[in-house]
Length: 193
Image (cartoon, rainbow, N blue to C red):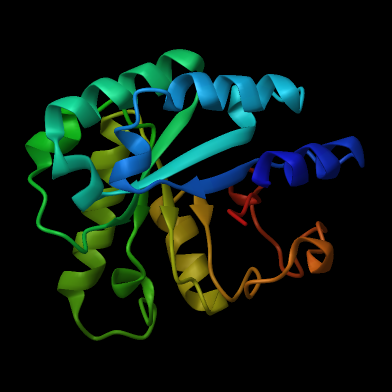
C-alpha cells in the first residue's frame, strides 16, 4: 500500500519516498528481500523511494540474522533506518556492525530541545548527529514540534525532521506535498512523512 501511494504521488510530480516500519518477524522473513524487490518492480519504483525502519530491539532480537537481512536489503539499494534511536539500550558496537543508512533520533531527545536547561540533552543530540555522520549515516529528528527546536537541529547538522511542526499524521489523500511555511536551507528541506 505504501509503495502504491508513493507511485501515485510520484506520478503527480512529487519526488517523495515512503517509510515502512518492520517488525522482527518481517525483518527475519527470508523472503523479505524478494518481496520488496517484486513490490518495487510492480510499482515501477527505484529502491531509493522506500526506507525500511527497524527499532533497536528488532535489530538485536536475532542479531546475526538481522545483520544478514539488513545487508541483503542494502544490496538491493534500500536504506534501512534505526527508528527511535536512543530509547533502547543497544550498544554502539551493534550500530557499527549493521549496514543501516539512517538513524531516527527518538523524540524524547527532541521535545523541548530549544527550551531545555539540561545541557546534557543537547550534548547527546549533538554527539549522536556527529557520530552518525562520521559513520556515513543520515539523521532524522523525531518529535520536532516547534521552530526553535527545528532551527537548533539545522544548526547541529541534522539532515531530516519529522513531527507536528511538519505535519500531524494524516490519511494519504489529506497530505499536502508543498513547501515548508518557514525558511529552511535546501539540504534540510526534506521531511519524513
